[in-house]
Image (cartoon, rainbow, N blue to C red; front, top):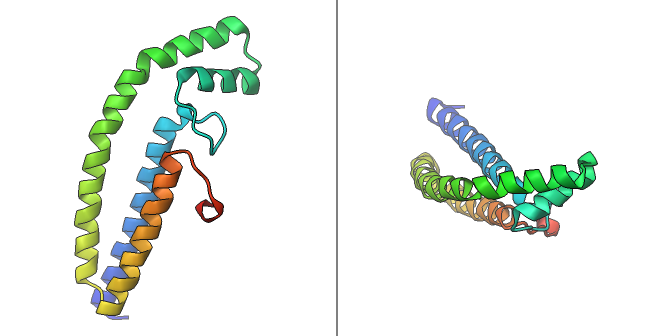
Length: 134
């Protein structure tokens, strides 16, 4: 493998891992909104109910946790609103640099791969799961 191909392969691998890592972090940051891996629950109440079930919480514990989640929801939303555009900006830069290392045929495949990855990430962030989202 030539040096430039090796560098492109390493860069592609790093990009995919970075995307997976950041996608996981973003999903984890908003996971409290998903009481059941795939069905979105857009309230602190839903996550508190899930914890109550999974951890056998008392009603007072559930209510206290619901209050905690409600109190931090604006801060979590603010962080996500700031993080999301920054992530997208960096992702575009990385993809543009990767494209410069690829042949025309590889660029076409990379574009298709990028669309699929973005689609899966979007489905996960909106709490949807289809057959292709696994």
